[in-house]
Length: 249
Image 1: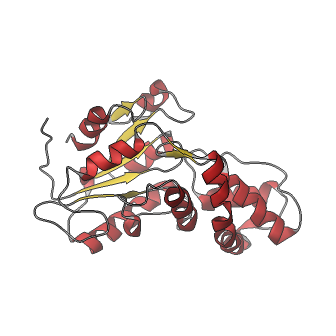
Image 2: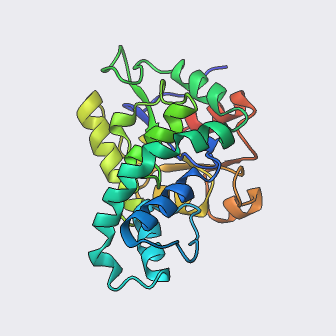
C-alpha cells in the first residue's frame, strides 16, 4: 500500500493516556503524593482529567481543595509533582499497559518515514513522531519509558501539559520544537494530532492541523465524529487503517 507524502514534512503528535497507554491511575497517584507533601492532607476530590493539561488539572485540584488563590500556588505544586513523578513508575509497571495495537502502529509509522526519532533529517521529507499530551514532561517520560514506548517517539520535540493551561496552545510549541530539530515545515496539515478526546480534536482544529481520533477512552466513535475529527478509529489494532488515517492528505 502506498501513502501520499506530498507535504514538506509530517509531524505526528500522539496523545498519551487512553490513546497509547493506560497508566493505571499513576498520574492521579502523583497528584495525591504531591498534594500531601505540599499541604499535609489528602486531596478531597478528583477533577476531570480527560483531554486536559496538567496545568489545568492542577489549578482545579487546588481550587477544589480550597487552596486560596490557586494561580499563585500552581507553579510550586507542579514543581512538587515533577519531583514525585518518578516514584509512581511502580504503579505504571504493575497496573499500566500499552493499549492494543499502539506499539505496532508507532513502529509501523516509523518505518514509513525518512527521519528516525532522536536523529536529524534523513533523505527526503522527515516524518517525526512525538507527543502532544496533557501530562507534564517528566510524567510522560515516566509512563512511556516504563512501558517501553519512548524508543521510537522523539520526546525532545513534544509539547507537554505543564507548559500551557489550554491544550491548543501546545501545538505551536511542538511545531516550533520539531522545526528547530529537523529543519522542516510542519505547518497546517503537515501536523497530525492523534488522540481520544474532543479536546484533542479542538486543539488540532485551532492550529489548522489534522485530527485523527481513537475511541479508546471515554468518548465513542459518534462523539469523536461529532467533534469534527478528520478520521475516527475504534482503536489502534488495525495498523493499516491507522497508517491510512494518519498519512492521508
